[in-house]
Image 1: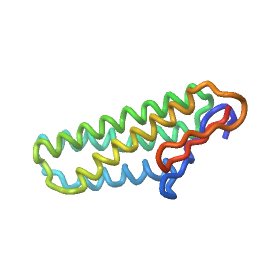
Image 2 (image 1 turned 90 degrees about the vertical axis):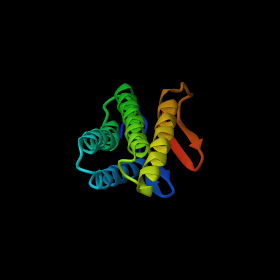
Image 3 (image 1 turned 135 degrees about the vertical axis):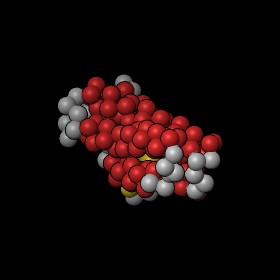
Image 4 (image 1 turned 180 degrees about the vertical axis):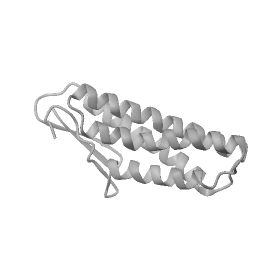
Length: 146
């Protein structure tokens, strides 16, 4: 990993953000498989799969970014996709398309991922002295390199 950009290999409850966003995508895909085969269920499902899987794919891209600017851009896109996922999940709940506790759990996870990604962005864009800096958000410790 280059010293000029941040690392997304941060652990929350023993799970790094890469693994957490991967698990989020898997859970999204499984949930969408339970949606009714109606126009609403199909269209919302498509949008949710796109947004929910994009969170993790953009974090993978961020981890391989060639510059700090590219890193931050991919994390920002991942955060945007987490927010969009939350919207589609709220729409599923609000319309009653699926009454499953996983909808609420995934809505909460999308919110938490958004907060974590905001912390990574803040840490990566904050001016700091040379050396390693850390940002602590709850039980998450985010490290980046100056």
